[in-house]
Length: 403
Image (cartoon, rainbow, N blue to C red; front, side, top):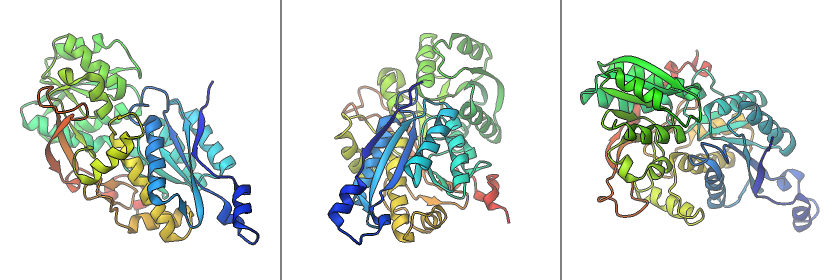
C-alpha cells in the first residue's frame, strides 16, 4: 500500500540556528507546520488534490512565510479516500512532525475520522473539501472550522429553486457513502419543504463506471427530476451516460466543481445550474487569486476547495499571529473573533459550531458559443444570502452550542 507524503516548503532547524546565532530560543527555530490531508491521486484529486496543497502554500507565501518568528512549512499527504489511511497519516503528521493544523480535503468519511482524532489531540482542523454536515454538526470540534458549504446548503440552494420552477417529483441517484447519503437526505428535506415529493432513490458504489441500471430505473419512475446525490467522476459519468440515454432536462446536480464542468465539456454541461461559494471570475479578489494559482498549475481553473484552502490558511495564520501562539483553543477563539477580509468569499463569518457562513452563487454553465475562453465556464444567475441557507449553530446538533 503506497502512502504519499511530500513537503512543499520547509527549513532546517540546524541551519536556522547557525544563521540566528546563539541565544535564539528553540521555539523560534521550530517551523509552524501545516498538514494537508487530501486525495492527491484518486477520484477526488481534481476537486482538491495537489492544487489544494499549492493553494495552501500560496497562502503561506502571501502571508510572508513566517509567523511569530517561525518559518511555515506545508506538507501534503495522500489519504487515498480511506479513513484508516487518513487517520494513520494524520497521527504521523501530529506525532512525528509536530503539525499545528490540518487542512482536510477529499472524501468526507476520511475528513470526519481525521477531525475526530484531531479533536482528541487538540489540533486545529480547516475543512476545505468535506461537504458532510457532520463536520460542524454532531462531529464538530472546538478546534475545527468548516469552510465548504455542506450538503444542506447545496440542497436548499438548488432543490428549492427547481421545485418552484415546476420540478415537483424527484428520484435520487445516490453515491453509497456518507456524503451521498447526507446530500440525498438534505435534498429530500429541501424538496418536501418547497412543496415537492420524493418518489424513490437508488444507490451506486463509489467509483462506479456503469450507471445504466440506475438511470433506467430513475427514468422509469416517472419523476419530474432525477437528482444526482454524487460528486466528482461519479457525477461526470452519470451526466454523460444520462445524455447517452437521452435524459437531459430532468437531471439536476447539486455539487459540481469547475474541473467536473471541464471534464464534461460545455457541449454536454451547458445549462446545468448549481450552487457554489466561489467562482474565479466573480470579483477582483477571486480573479487575483485565480491568476496566481493558474500561473503555477498549468492554467487549471481553481475549484471551491482550492479557494477555501487559500482563504482558511490565511485566516488561520492571522489568528496565530493575533493569539501569539499556535495553541488550538486560543487560535480558534481568534479565528471566530476576527473578520475574514480577503474578499474572495462573500460576507463570510464563523459560527460557534465552526461553520463558516457565506453568501453563495447560483450559477449556470455557459454554452460553447457564449464562452470567451477555456476558463469562461459560468454565468452568475443570482447571489443567495448565506443566512437564508446555512443552519444556525444552535440547530446544527453540535454539542459546542449547548447551554
